Structures are given as structure tokens and as C-alpha cells.
Image 1 (tube, helix red, strand yellow):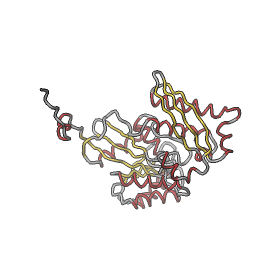
Image 2: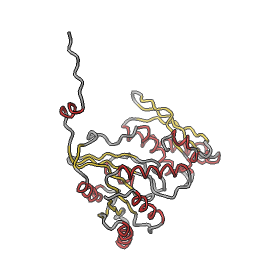
Image 3: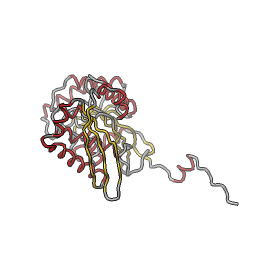
Image 4: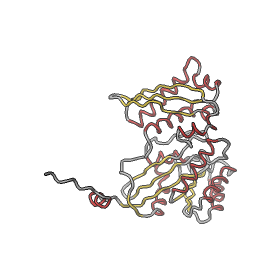
Length: 313
């Protein structure tokens, strides 16, 4: 008679494969729009994971990025840029920021010295202070283009709000010039078991990353307001032998926006499709066939049910 298989408990599993131990914890990347949070995440992970654009509100929901090396596993939480909410989607983004701050061990306040401190900087400070974060690091970004005077002014502004915080100056676009922040994080994170395998970069589905990369292309190629009125939904993801077919709906709010996206003779949407397919292909390491369909969804940014359906509520 065959003996019944032994049921393993957590202790047995850990005994079979002990977890790696090192400096580990959650790190919130917080700041006003366009301070370089997503750029910094991509630089640390050495992959194009987070959508990046020069336009504000590129990031709509928080994203986990897992950085692992020999001595540490840093779990970066890339939050939307902090701004005054004016719609249901803005409220959702604000709640996402609050969750990121609540879940993090350290808050990295990323600042852009090339812009004068203003209302959004004040709002970023208020959000961090409201979360009562004890461990705050001020990261002054863009040392590659900012003047010494700009960096001094920016640091003084944030240091006044967080007098006990450590401050570091970086260039988020460059791995070597961002190394001082990594060193500071490792020095301040606690020892603990790694929570993810060393080859994992995120807990987000590939299709969600694909949607964000499509938004990135929209932000680059369209007029200022249109991409912010566009929600990207993945309707079909068919992983075939030699390529992936992805069916996508671009949800817009008004009829007039449709013509802008399509362009004369459909040339603009063709350019968007080709560029987005190229970026997604680079992420999934497979040829991508992309189909784009434009649909009018009036005032979707204030439609809480729709926002919930697309993971923004």
C-alpha cells in the first residue's frame, strides 16, 4: 500500500530552501509630477518597466519594481505624481499615493531643482507629513542639468520641511549617478528575508505593463490634453508560437479626439501602433502584433465603475 504524501508546512518549505537574507524593505518614490520617479525606477531595474513622459500624470497607479543584488532586495513603489485632484481619477491617484506611503518603510521625496518650488511641492510635503513617515530621504534629481544655485534652493526648501532627513543628489537617468541613493537606502533598510526570486522585476501582469507603454506613446505623439483623456484597455492577449497578438481599445471622451488620434488617412494611429508594438516587444522579448480600436466613453474620468474596471479605483 502506497504511503500518503507528507503535507509540508511553512517551516518545512523554509528548511528545504532557506530564504536569502539581506537589506530589504519597501521604498516609496514620492514627488510632484515629472520629477523622474519612473525614470529612476527604470534605471535601477535596467529595463523599461514604468511609462515615462515629459508630460504630467504619466503614472496613474502605483507600480512595484523589485531591485535585487547580492546584498539587498529593495521593493520600490512608484507612485503617481502629486497634484491637486479635480476629478474621480485624480482622487483615485491620490488614494494610491496614500497607500504607497502607508506600505513603505522609507519615503524617498524626489525633487526637481530645475523648477521653482511651488504648490505641488508643498502638497508632496503635506502627503509625506500626513503619513507620519519617520524615515524620509530627499533625493535632488537632475544634477546633470541643474545649476548649483538651483540645487541649493531646492534642498533648502525640502530640508526646511524635513530637517532630520538625509539628502542625496542624483541624476535619475544615469545608473552611476544614482548609486548614492542606493547606498543610502541599503544603509537605512532593515535586515530581512527576500520576498521575491532574484529574477523577478514586478508583480504586475505583462498586459498591464503593455497598457502603460501604449499610454507612454500616446503621451509622446498626441496633443497635450488628448492622452490624458484616453484610457487604454487590453481586450485580448493571445500568446502564439511566434508572436503575441494584443487587441486594445483606446477609450476617449469626445468625438473630436478620435480624429486627432487617427490622424490624416489614419497615419497617426498607424505610427502609434508601430511604436507601441516595438516597445512592448522589447519588454516581452517576442514579436508583437497590435490592434488598436478607438471608442468614445463620455466623461470616463469621473465614472467610478469604469475606473474600478480598469484598476484605477
